[in-house]
Length: 280
Image (spheres, rainbow, N blue to C red):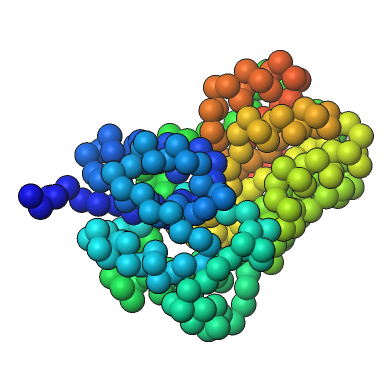
């Protein structure tokens, strides 16, 4: 019997987002065909999808074959791939090697846009993952009992400006600030490691800013925060988490807010960016 339901593909990395989006797509009555990455994707994704194929990072030919065999026309990317794995674990097949050889730059966005073009040649469109879970996007405003102090707001303004520049250069999304000094910038080690480095240097009271890159293509990479983010912040006694409203995924939002209130952490989301204290 031919399956008549529309099939949506997931190129899955790690974390809970692939599981959440798979649940949401199936609730909408569509099939989910997942290509999962060994050593990154949570094995429990198998229980959330109609079909799953496990591959090593770099197996582009295999990835395309799976989607075409299952009549998948739309694909989304969900979850994280360890940047360390990109260098140490990638095992490209012939199609993957050909793809890599044609890359002019190796920045995240450049690679992902080129991947979208490669899939488009095969009739496969990459769509934004937020299309299926818009309720996870951060709402505007201060979400916690504790509100940022005047000093915190000064640090937020500095961190926001620097984070946008960092994003414009396609380096990272997270900046840690303390008393108007930049104490950590996100690199290949990721957000949690950046918060840990910066928080230890700041000793306590650090402000964490994690926002969307300018002109970010949300098909590929949407900033995300969750309980793990707050756990790291608590360990280094960081004071404020700042995100971009409508452009940041917040996992387990209610649990995050309860935890932040217990730990005395402020969570605030700006839509157009913060306004410096005292500025009219």
